[in-house]
Image (cartoon, rainbow, N blue to C red):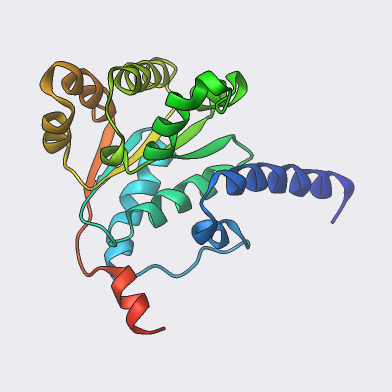
Length: 204
């Protein structure tokens, strides 16, 4: 490996490490290594669609019941972008909501907020589990509006379909947000199948 290759590999590893630091510990191993981990059949069926969306710089909205692997494939998509030396951030919607409401105590810094807007890809996990208040809905609307206008793709995961999430948010606030999250060009993917977490527990 020559100096240029070595420098490129160090840069790549830096982007991967930055992304991994935002991923929950139980998923951190997905960011490691140079090869993709094996996917379950239910995940494989949708991976090609997600990779196609990534190649076109499109958004993805992945929904389905708990445990079918939505977060796994979203993290692997983020890892793919980080391997290309691009800034990626993983953010749990419920954690983001808590931090927003604690931001008056400086728990969420201006830099962290800016990173959500500027990351070249954002993985917004479990958006339906967000505690929807005027503050969180306003912030989410501004975040989605900005990222859409700047052509910065967002991968959103949810237990709820776009229509169900609109009902959860309320049509007044939910319709504008969801219409942007699933606006063309966006790949909307319904994942279903066995609860992989229960399968894992049964083998422990």
